[in-house]
Length: 217
Ligand SMILES: [Zn+2]
Image (cartoon, rainbow, N blue to C red):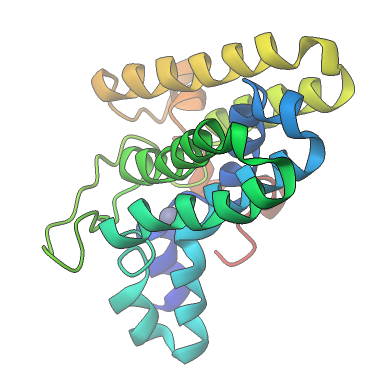
């Protein structure tokens, strides 16, 4: 199997999905308190585990060996939000430091939870202390339903700031409900369930894959 085929079967949640989820999580206080800078910090925390994706510059074999391991392990999980909150506290004031740290931790955990829930590439959450990986594989590769939910809620957040918090709550709630439904609903290739479970995605035109942020497969 070539690299694209392997990617199609094994990649994790894609960067646009991590960015939009981080933006939605920022609407529960961080954006209101710290503005665009706070939202940017949430995005950085929400994407940070995938820095191990740059392992691909060292070659496909190296990438396969270390992506979803180095940046997704417990040491980065526990230290990165604190390290990010430090500059945030210095700039915004230390009184809000604990809450900012907490929300950055939530953003990073949102990344790990979706990585584990979505596709079928085990995430080694306890690396370097354990090589055990977790993957639920609930979402079909390039299934546009979760992506569309995240995009739609983010568009509302950007265009209608007054509705940002309810839109974020509805978007994240819909994503959770979809994942729970996928846990009991097997993938289908026909009818409405075929559309809703991503059964069409493998034969879809490239533009639909691009929408999810996949420019490789
Ligand atoms: Zn990841």
